[in-house]
Length: 505
Image (cartoon, rainbow, N blue to C red):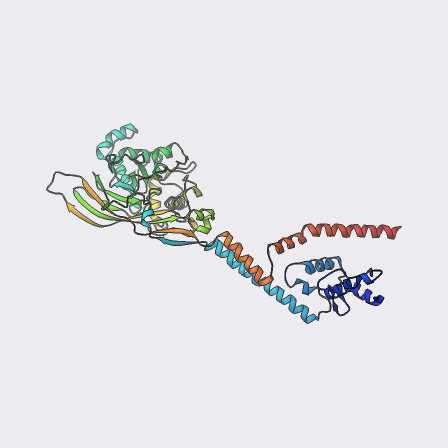
């Protein structure tokens, strides 16, 4: 029976039983087992491990790293702890591993930036059979918006002395704009916080049910253009005088059904009658008008015909899962405004503009929602606003500091190509407006381009490419860095304690 020399067995043991002399261990094992029946006993140092040999570290930290590197599923680490390596080989191995790790980190940052800042894309939809196009909200703002016949009664109601000075002031106030605000007459007989209610009582009346439809949303709202009648505006309630006076912050539920256009009806038109000279605007039902909203004049004794085109951007359901900065838009329940219970871009612009006014003139104008602790602008402060109009971004995009992101779901209605016909030879004293509606042939969608699962897939592919790592590899790293490390340190402390006791004894 062949015998294994003692020096060979010790050499094998020193090499951690991975090789036997110059013979590869699996071949040696197969040959040994083939002749095992012929032997009376098995050598006690028979090799029982398969793999690369490892170096022998001196410190506990070094031993722990050797243990991790030799058993890790991350490719290349085992070469760092292999014995009999030339220093140049070890350096090149470490350099390759470091380079692969840096490439992985760099690519991961690129993928993360893409997920954070370029996660959505605008796509075009041409399937008209599935389009859902809302009818617009109509805003009608009489200019000037003071009914002279109401002045005596309104002044008496509010205890105002009826003088020519008071009358001229409120007539000016009913037609005030940012352009003429610097010319505001000085009038201090009536507190500024009562002006809005007085102007509301002095406003010109417009017949209700203007669109010949039973609209529950028809109401008067307070805007930068003064008091305006609006219809089909879901968010109009948030700009009404009663909502402000009652300090109401209730969010109105969104209705399940809203007025829609039907694509199978040719020649869709909107007809309405206005008794006074006014500015009109067709607006998103989930938006309010602001100073730079495109508006058109409607004059008495005129027959006007215009074309209204519609553009639409919708948000897909999977985009809602993203954060606000990822989708680069907001929905109404994202909030974030201090003077409005819901979010829209125009509400955000109005709030930011009022904040600039408050910072420059220490007040809020009478047509803005009052805030406790902030005074309403008097005549002198209105002149201050007029002087500061260049910094109020009236006809410009708001500054980035306002953080007014666009709405995720947007309907844009543009009135153009107006044809006006005078009605001088008729007894009609009103203006008749006809809007010919051009329904959209395409709509746009905010779609998800790069989601979180795409990010994980990209990082996982990069990790496999550069390091040959998988999910289990990262779990393994976490395990060796936490749980296994804890028990290893605990075991080392116990050994030191036993060694100290044995030396003491």
